[in-house]
Length: 104
Image (cartoon, rainbow, N blue to C red; front, side, top):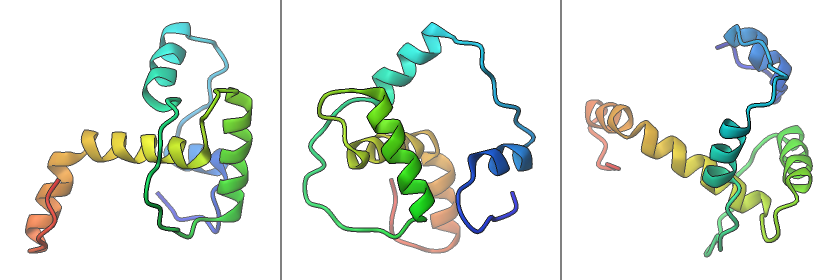
């Protein structure tokens, strides 16, 4: 995927060849909510730099979800944990190829 200056989800979708869908799927929504919209204590924090536009989008999404206790940090943490778990084998393979010592 071509890198964009900032996160524009419409641009990302076009580059990936993904057309947005507007058909509600209650089962997918339920699964998504269980997986990502779980409030949690983020614990010790460390800042990272992401485009302001992305933070603004995440802020709006978290507010729209209207889940008590859900924060941008908790939402992003859930997304990142899911990504790391789903891609564990690939990440470990790439880290071994680069002779890095971090394994998930």
